[in-house]
Length: 236
Length: 95
Ligand SMILES: Nc1nc2c(ncn2[C@@H]2O[C@H](COP(=O)(O)OP(=O)(O)OP(=O)(O)O)[C@@H](O)[C@H]2O)c(=O)[nH]1
Ligand SMILES: [Mg+2]
Image (cartoon, rainbow over all chains, first blue to last red; front, side, top):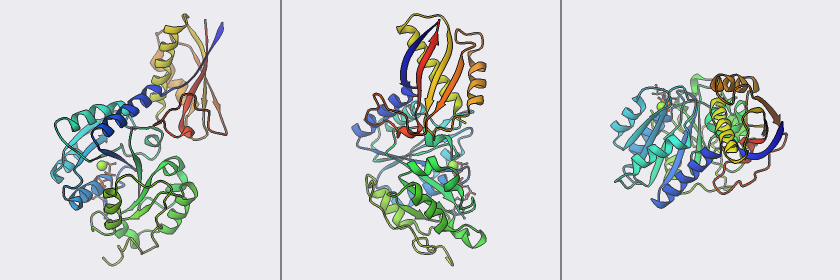
Protein backbone atom coordinates (compact mmCIF):
# COMPACT_ATOMS: atom_id res chain seq x y z
CA UNK A 1 0.00 0.00 0.00
CA UNK A 2 1.22 3.50 -0.70
CA UNK A 3 -0.03 6.98 -0.20
CA UNK A 4 -0.43 9.54 -2.97
CA UNK A 5 -0.65 13.15 -1.94
CA UNK A 6 -3.29 14.91 -3.99
CA UNK A 7 -4.33 18.13 -2.25
CA UNK A 8 -6.76 19.18 -4.93
CA UNK A 9 -10.26 20.50 -4.76
CA UNK A 10 -12.88 17.82 -5.23
CA UNK A 11 -14.94 20.17 -7.36
CA UNK A 12 -12.01 21.38 -9.45
CA UNK A 13 -13.91 20.59 -12.65
CA UNK A 14 -16.92 22.64 -11.54
CA UNK A 15 -14.66 25.53 -10.66
CA UNK A 16 -13.12 25.38 -14.11
CA UNK A 17 -16.60 25.64 -15.65
CA UNK A 18 -17.42 28.54 -13.34
CA UNK A 19 -14.29 30.34 -14.57
CA UNK A 20 -15.31 29.61 -18.13
CA UNK A 21 -18.72 31.15 -17.46
CA UNK A 22 -17.05 34.28 -16.08
CA UNK A 23 -14.87 34.48 -19.15
CA UNK A 24 -17.85 34.11 -21.49
CA UNK A 25 -19.88 36.73 -19.63
CA UNK A 26 -16.96 39.16 -19.55
CA UNK A 27 -16.38 38.70 -23.27
CA UNK A 28 -20.02 39.55 -23.92
CA UNK A 29 -20.09 42.42 -21.43
CA UNK A 30 -22.81 40.81 -19.36
CA UNK A 31 -23.30 40.31 -15.64
CA UNK A 32 -24.88 37.31 -13.97
CA UNK A 33 -26.92 37.39 -10.77
CA UNK A 34 -28.04 34.18 -9.12
CA UNK A 35 -31.22 34.06 -7.03
CA UNK A 36 -31.21 31.57 -4.16
CA UNK A 37 -34.04 30.87 -1.73
CA UNK A 38 -36.37 28.17 -0.42
CA UNK A 39 -39.05 26.63 -2.63
CA UNK A 40 -41.77 29.24 -3.00
CA UNK A 41 -39.75 32.12 -1.56
CA UNK A 42 -40.80 34.23 -4.54
CA UNK A 43 -37.77 33.99 -6.84
CA UNK A 44 -39.78 33.76 -10.05
CA UNK A 45 -42.27 36.39 -8.88
CA UNK A 46 -39.41 38.79 -8.15
CA UNK A 47 -37.96 38.12 -11.60
CA UNK A 48 -41.32 38.72 -13.29
CA UNK A 49 -41.77 42.03 -11.50
CA UNK A 50 -38.14 43.06 -12.05
CA UNK A 51 -38.36 42.38 -15.78
CA UNK A 52 -41.51 44.48 -15.97
CA UNK A 53 -39.95 47.38 -14.07
CA UNK A 54 -36.69 47.32 -16.00
CA UNK A 55 -38.61 47.74 -19.24
CA UNK A 56 -35.92 46.28 -21.47
CA UNK A 57 -32.95 48.20 -20.09
CA UNK A 58 -30.65 46.53 -19.20
CA UNK A 59 -31.40 43.68 -21.59
CA UNK A 60 -32.21 40.67 -19.42
CA UNK A 61 -32.08 36.92 -20.02
CA UNK A 62 -32.97 34.22 -17.54
CA UNK A 63 -31.76 30.70 -16.73
CA UNK A 64 -34.29 28.71 -14.72
CA UNK A 65 -33.28 25.73 -12.59
CA UNK A 66 -35.87 23.26 -11.32
CA UNK A 67 -35.97 19.56 -10.64
CA UNK A 68 -38.85 19.18 -13.08
CA UNK A 69 -41.24 21.13 -15.33
CA UNK A 70 -40.71 24.23 -17.43
CA UNK A 71 -43.32 26.20 -15.54
CA UNK A 72 -41.02 28.94 -14.32
CA UNK A 73 -39.53 29.32 -17.79
CA UNK A 74 -43.07 29.72 -19.15
CA UNK A 75 -43.73 32.50 -16.65
CA UNK A 76 -40.52 34.28 -17.63
CA UNK A 77 -41.25 33.89 -21.33
CA UNK A 78 -44.64 35.50 -20.76
CA UNK A 79 -42.82 38.36 -19.06
CA UNK A 80 -41.15 38.88 -22.42
CA UNK A 81 -37.49 37.95 -22.09
CA UNK A 82 -35.42 35.04 -23.40
CA UNK A 83 -35.17 32.11 -21.02
CA UNK A 84 -33.56 28.67 -20.87
CA UNK A 85 -34.87 26.02 -18.50
CA UNK A 86 -32.53 23.51 -16.88
CA UNK A 87 -34.14 20.46 -15.29
CA UNK A 88 -31.80 18.98 -12.72
CA UNK A 89 -33.76 15.73 -12.28
CA UNK A 90 -32.82 14.82 -8.75
CA UNK A 91 -30.10 17.43 -8.37
CA UNK A 92 -30.60 19.83 -5.48
CA UNK A 93 -28.59 22.63 -7.11
CA UNK A 94 -27.41 23.88 -10.49
CA UNK A 95 -23.87 23.13 -11.60
CA UNK A 96 -21.52 25.49 -13.39
CA UNK A 97 -21.39 23.03 -16.28
CA UNK A 98 -25.16 22.96 -16.78
CA UNK A 99 -25.25 26.74 -16.54
CA UNK A 100 -22.51 26.95 -19.15
CA UNK A 101 -24.61 25.11 -21.72
CA UNK A 102 -27.63 27.27 -20.90
CA UNK A 103 -25.55 30.42 -21.07
CA UNK A 104 -24.14 29.54 -24.46
CA UNK A 105 -27.69 28.93 -25.66
CA UNK A 106 -29.01 32.16 -24.18
CA UNK A 107 -26.18 34.31 -25.55
CA UNK A 108 -26.08 32.85 -29.02
CA UNK A 109 -27.07 35.48 -31.56
CA UNK A 110 -28.33 37.80 -28.86
CA UNK A 111 -26.97 40.71 -26.86
CA UNK A 112 -27.75 40.66 -23.15
CA UNK A 113 -26.50 42.88 -20.34
CA UNK A 114 -27.76 40.90 -17.40
CA UNK A 115 -28.43 37.21 -16.89
CA UNK A 116 -30.47 36.07 -13.91
CA UNK A 117 -30.09 32.49 -12.79
CA UNK A 118 -32.89 31.12 -10.62
CA UNK A 119 -31.41 28.20 -8.72
CA UNK A 120 -33.36 25.21 -7.45
CA UNK A 121 -35.43 26.14 -4.38
CA UNK A 122 -33.03 25.26 -1.56
CA UNK A 123 -31.18 27.22 1.12
CA UNK A 124 -28.39 24.69 1.58
CA UNK A 125 -26.74 23.24 -1.51
CA UNK A 126 -26.73 26.16 -3.98
CA UNK A 127 -24.73 28.13 -1.42
CA UNK A 128 -21.75 25.81 -1.83
CA UNK A 129 -21.44 26.00 -5.61
CA UNK A 130 -19.89 28.69 -7.74
CA UNK A 131 -21.67 29.08 -11.07
CA UNK A 132 -19.53 31.94 -12.30
CA UNK A 133 -22.04 34.49 -11.06
CA UNK A 134 -21.17 38.06 -10.11
CA UNK A 135 -23.42 37.85 -7.08
CA UNK A 136 -25.50 35.37 -5.19
CA UNK A 137 -28.70 37.07 -4.08
CA UNK A 138 -30.51 35.44 -1.16
CA UNK A 139 -34.29 35.62 -0.80
CA UNK A 140 -36.29 35.03 2.36
CA UNK A 141 -40.05 35.43 2.35
CA UNK A 142 -41.69 36.75 5.48
CA UNK A 143 -43.83 33.60 5.71
CA UNK A 144 -40.73 31.45 6.31
CA UNK A 145 -39.83 32.76 9.77
CA UNK A 146 -37.16 35.25 10.70
CA UNK A 147 -34.80 32.55 12.01
CA UNK A 148 -33.87 31.31 8.53
CA UNK A 149 -30.85 33.56 8.21
CA UNK A 150 -29.33 32.15 11.37
CA UNK A 151 -30.21 28.56 10.48
CA UNK A 152 -28.63 28.56 7.02
CA UNK A 153 -25.57 30.75 7.58
CA UNK A 154 -23.51 29.71 4.59
CA UNK A 155 -25.83 31.19 1.98
CA UNK A 156 -26.27 34.43 3.87
CA UNK A 157 -22.57 34.80 4.54
CA UNK A 158 -21.86 34.54 0.82
CA UNK A 159 -24.82 36.57 -0.46
CA UNK A 160 -24.09 39.92 -2.09
CA UNK A 161 -27.65 41.06 -1.33
CA UNK A 162 -30.59 39.92 0.79
CA UNK A 163 -34.16 40.39 -0.42
CA UNK A 164 -37.02 39.97 2.03
CA UNK A 165 -40.09 39.10 -0.05
CA UNK A 166 -43.88 39.03 0.46
CA UNK A 167 -43.65 41.97 2.86
CA UNK A 168 -47.31 42.85 2.26
CA UNK A 169 -48.07 39.76 4.30
CA UNK A 170 -46.12 41.03 7.34
CA UNK A 171 -49.25 41.92 9.32
CA UNK A 172 -50.32 38.27 9.11
CA UNK A 173 -47.02 36.82 10.31
CA UNK A 174 -44.74 37.02 13.33
CA UNK A 175 -41.75 37.76 11.09
CA UNK A 176 -39.54 40.51 12.57
CA UNK A 177 -37.58 42.14 9.72
CA UNK A 178 -35.24 43.78 12.23
CA UNK A 179 -34.34 40.37 13.71
CA UNK A 180 -33.65 38.94 10.26
CA UNK A 181 -31.48 41.92 9.35
CA UNK A 182 -29.63 41.71 12.66
CA UNK A 183 -28.85 38.02 12.04
CA UNK A 184 -27.77 38.88 8.49
CA UNK A 185 -25.42 41.60 9.71
CA UNK A 186 -23.68 39.14 12.01
CA UNK A 187 -22.76 37.08 8.96
CA UNK A 188 -22.49 39.74 6.34
CA UNK A 189 -21.49 43.34 6.96
CA UNK A 190 -21.39 44.77 3.51
CA UNK A 191 -24.30 43.53 1.43
CA UNK A 192 -27.48 45.56 1.02
CA UNK A 193 -30.89 44.40 2.24
CA UNK A 194 -34.12 45.02 0.34
CA UNK A 195 -37.69 44.52 1.50
CA UNK A 196 -40.17 44.05 -1.32
CA UNK A 197 -43.51 42.68 -2.30
CA UNK A 198 -43.46 41.49 -5.87
CA UNK A 199 -47.22 41.08 -6.15
CA UNK A 200 -48.19 44.38 -4.53
CA UNK A 201 -45.25 46.02 -6.29
CA UNK A 202 -43.96 47.74 -3.16
CA UNK A 203 -40.42 48.46 -1.98
CA UNK A 204 -38.96 47.69 -5.38
CA UNK A 205 -37.29 51.00 -6.30
CA UNK A 206 -34.08 50.43 -4.29
CA UNK A 207 -33.88 46.88 -5.63
CA UNK A 208 -34.28 48.05 -9.21
CA UNK A 209 -31.60 50.69 -8.65
CA UNK A 210 -29.30 47.96 -7.35
CA UNK A 211 -29.99 45.76 -10.37
CA UNK A 212 -29.38 48.64 -12.76
CA UNK A 213 -26.35 49.82 -10.85
CA UNK A 214 -23.84 47.45 -12.36
CA UNK A 215 -21.44 45.55 -10.20
CA UNK A 216 -22.60 45.24 -6.63
CA UNK A 217 -20.47 47.40 -4.40
CA UNK A 218 -18.41 45.18 -2.15
CA UNK A 219 -18.14 46.28 1.41
CA UNK A 220 -20.25 49.34 0.85
CA UNK A 221 -23.22 48.97 3.11
CA UNK A 222 -26.60 50.38 2.38
CA UNK A 223 -28.69 50.97 5.43
CA UNK A 224 -30.89 48.02 6.28
CA UNK A 225 -34.59 48.80 6.02
CA UNK A 226 -36.38 49.77 9.16
CA UNK A 227 -39.41 47.75 10.05
CA UNK A 228 -41.65 49.74 7.78
CA UNK A 229 -39.08 52.01 6.12
CA UNK A 230 -37.87 50.98 2.69
CA UNK A 231 -40.47 48.26 2.53
CA UNK A 232 -43.50 50.44 2.86
CA UNK A 233 -45.80 47.48 2.39
CA UNK A 234 -48.04 48.15 5.34
CA UNK A 235 -51.37 49.52 4.35
CA UNK A 236 -50.50 49.39 0.67
CA UNK B 1 -27.51 17.19 0.32
CA UNK B 2 -25.07 17.79 -2.51
CA UNK B 3 -23.04 14.72 -1.58
CA UNK B 4 -23.62 13.18 -5.00
CA UNK B 5 -21.70 16.02 -6.66
CA UNK B 6 -18.89 15.44 -4.21
CA UNK B 7 -18.87 11.71 -4.95
CA UNK B 8 -18.66 12.42 -8.67
CA UNK B 9 -15.82 14.85 -8.00
CA UNK B 10 -13.93 12.22 -5.99
CA UNK B 11 -14.37 9.69 -8.81
CA UNK B 12 -13.08 12.16 -11.39
CA UNK B 13 -10.06 12.98 -9.24
CA UNK B 14 -9.31 9.31 -8.63
CA UNK B 15 -9.40 8.65 -12.38
CA UNK B 16 -6.99 11.51 -12.97
CA UNK B 17 -4.62 10.29 -10.29
CA UNK B 18 -4.71 6.80 -11.79
CA UNK B 19 -3.64 8.30 -15.09
CA UNK B 20 -0.61 9.86 -13.40
CA UNK B 21 0.46 7.22 -10.90
CA UNK B 22 -0.11 3.61 -11.66
CA UNK B 23 -2.31 1.73 -9.23
CA UNK B 24 -5.21 -0.67 -9.46
CA UNK B 25 -7.23 -0.08 -6.33
CA UNK B 26 -7.99 2.69 -3.89
CA UNK B 27 -8.15 1.64 -0.26
CA UNK B 28 -8.97 4.98 1.27
CA UNK B 29 -9.60 8.59 0.33
CA UNK B 30 -8.64 11.29 2.79
CA UNK B 31 -10.84 14.33 2.48
CA UNK B 32 -10.46 17.67 4.18
CA UNK B 33 -13.31 20.11 4.45
CA UNK B 34 -14.02 23.39 6.12
CA UNK B 35 -16.53 23.95 8.89
CA UNK B 36 -19.23 25.14 6.49
CA UNK B 37 -19.14 22.53 3.76
CA UNK B 38 -22.01 20.65 5.44
CA UNK B 39 -20.95 17.21 4.30
CA UNK B 40 -22.83 14.31 5.82
CA UNK B 41 -20.17 11.61 6.06
CA UNK B 42 -22.50 8.63 6.24
CA UNK B 43 -24.47 9.82 3.24
CA UNK B 44 -21.23 10.40 1.39
CA UNK B 45 -19.96 6.86 1.98
CA UNK B 46 -23.38 5.38 1.21
CA UNK B 47 -23.62 7.18 -2.13
CA UNK B 48 -20.00 6.42 -2.97
CA UNK B 49 -20.55 2.71 -2.33
CA UNK B 50 -23.70 2.71 -4.44
CA UNK B 51 -22.15 4.55 -7.37
CA UNK B 52 -18.84 2.66 -7.42
CA UNK B 53 -20.29 -0.84 -7.00
CA UNK B 54 -18.60 -3.27 -9.39
CA UNK B 55 -16.10 -0.63 -10.51
CA UNK B 56 -12.37 -0.38 -9.75
CA UNK B 57 -13.19 2.08 -6.97
CA UNK B 58 -15.45 -0.32 -5.11
CA UNK B 59 -14.64 -0.68 -1.42
CA UNK B 60 -12.67 2.52 -0.91
CA UNK B 61 -13.16 4.12 2.49
CA UNK B 62 -13.81 7.83 2.68
CA UNK B 63 -12.30 9.60 5.67
CA UNK B 64 -13.31 13.17 6.34
CA UNK B 65 -11.26 15.55 8.45
CA UNK B 66 -13.25 18.60 9.35
CA UNK B 67 -11.17 21.69 9.94
CA UNK B 68 -12.07 24.43 12.33
CA UNK B 69 -10.44 26.93 10.04
CA UNK B 70 -10.93 27.20 6.29
CA UNK B 71 -8.64 24.74 4.50
CA UNK B 72 -5.70 26.07 2.51
CA UNK B 73 -6.32 26.87 -1.10
CA UNK B 74 -3.51 25.53 -3.26
CA UNK B 75 -3.94 26.94 -6.72
CA UNK B 76 -7.13 28.70 -5.68
CA UNK B 77 -7.04 31.26 -8.45
CA UNK B 78 -9.40 34.08 -9.27
CA UNK B 79 -13.01 33.11 -9.38
CA UNK B 80 -12.57 30.32 -6.88
CA UNK B 81 -15.32 30.29 -4.30
CA UNK B 82 -14.69 31.39 -0.74
CA UNK B 83 -12.50 28.77 0.93
CA UNK B 84 -15.02 28.00 3.64
CA UNK B 85 -17.02 25.69 1.37
CA UNK B 86 -14.16 23.87 -0.30
CA UNK B 87 -13.66 20.12 -0.04
CA UNK B 88 -10.19 18.79 -0.79
CA UNK B 89 -8.78 15.36 -1.44
CA UNK B 90 -5.67 15.32 0.72
CA UNK B 91 -4.40 11.90 -0.26
CA UNK B 92 -5.26 8.49 -1.63
CA UNK B 93 -4.17 5.17 -0.16
CA UNK B 94 -3.68 2.89 -3.12
CA UNK B 95 -2.26 -0.45 -4.11
N1 LIG C 1 -48.17 38.19 -1.55
C1 LIG C 1 -47.05 37.82 -2.19
N2 LIG C 1 -46.98 36.61 -2.76
C2 LIG C 1 -45.86 36.29 -3.41
C3 LIG C 1 -44.75 37.16 -3.51
N3 LIG C 1 -43.76 36.54 -4.21
C4 LIG C 1 -44.25 35.32 -4.53
N4 LIG C 1 -45.51 35.17 -4.06
C5 LIG C 1 -46.36 33.97 -4.22
O1 LIG C 1 -45.68 32.88 -3.62
C6 LIG C 1 -45.84 31.72 -4.42
C7 LIG C 1 -44.48 31.20 -4.85
O2 LIG C 1 -43.84 32.18 -5.67
P1 LIG C 1 -42.76 31.81 -6.76
O3 LIG C 1 -42.32 33.07 -7.37
O4 LIG C 1 -43.26 30.75 -7.66
O5 LIG C 1 -41.63 31.20 -5.83
P2 LIG C 1 -40.24 30.53 -6.27
O6 LIG C 1 -39.26 30.92 -5.22
O7 LIG C 1 -39.93 30.89 -7.66
O8 LIG C 1 -40.59 28.98 -6.14
P3 LIG C 1 -39.77 27.71 -6.74
O9 LIG C 1 -39.26 28.09 -8.08
O10 LIG C 1 -40.80 26.64 -6.81
O11 LIG C 1 -38.69 27.41 -5.75
C8 LIG C 1 -46.70 32.13 -5.60
O12 LIG C 1 -48.05 31.80 -5.32
C9 LIG C 1 -46.51 33.62 -5.68
O13 LIG C 1 -47.62 34.29 -6.24
C10 LIG C 1 -44.85 38.44 -2.90
O14 LIG C 1 -43.93 39.28 -2.94
N5 LIG C 1 -46.03 38.72 -2.26
MG1 LIG D 1 -39.48 29.66 -9.25
